[in-house]
Length: 153
Image (cartoon, rainbow, N blue to C red; front, side, top):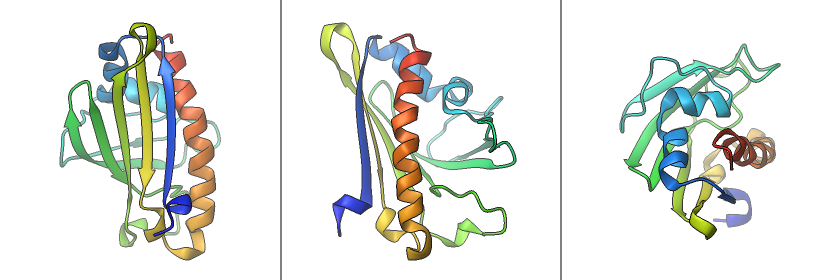
């Protein structure tokens, strides 16, 4: 397995308490507001799916769908999804999903270190693997900034 193409990892130190960053991750409505997906009325529950329309301009016709894997309050939230699943003509359910894992640790000056790891790209079909990796790599660059701004850090 080539870890250079199998996983994306981003970390950011956020000037906000862990409890605040956790709420921005674990509350589905709040997650949706910084992530760019409408998850109104839904909750993150291990083993359950969440679905909603993407709210990012130009992608509103797309549906976000994830299956929550694990929740460890104020420490870890993980889910499976299909990376860069943007072609409405493709049934991504036949593909192996990637695993997205958000981990929280104490950061400097009473803040929080958020690490996001998305792994499993080596199982994405070869025809779309590099594009999915490239687009999600850019996406995570943006999303760690989005959550930091959202919580005021």
